[in-house]
Length: 248
Image: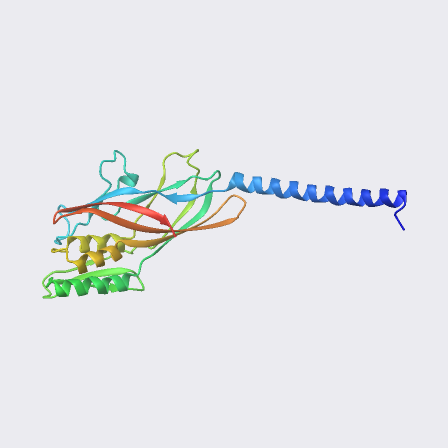
């Protein structure tokens, strides 16, 4: 038995109500997504050049610890010495707040590898560290020259806000961890670039970066990068390379 006219009308009315409800829900979700995208930040580091030279009037070590960004009229934070800064751009559409940057660097493992290379190469120093505090002590085997970099390794940085690049064209800068700068400087300064030295230098030149931040709607975002130095030229007096960031 078929449906009566009134039953067809009721059925069509119910179907239309369902369609309207779904259309309304879709519209609400679309507006919510557009509102979220309008506030969405995206923090990313950028590739930049790096040059290391021996310090002038600094510690009595022959390492290339004077870092700077060459051929740049206004390097971020006037990068020089052991405070080399990378640039962060917010290429999103909204500001980022409560930005936390965490570096991942296997300090103990890398120090052990460098010490093994130094021992095989008859170098007159070895490196010691305080893993809980990220301090490095550098001591000569003979005990004549002992030195310590009594500064934290800067493995965590925080910024209250990073505005979009469309609003703030000057990028925000953060310092590379001191451990990364020191170990790369030491390893690049070792004489006789054997396969073992180059292999350790490749491992020393990699560091992980995790960027956590919120948008103005308190939505949380997490991005991870693999940072590394591609060395293009190394001599006893200087090195030159490219610092690059790949999404992890």
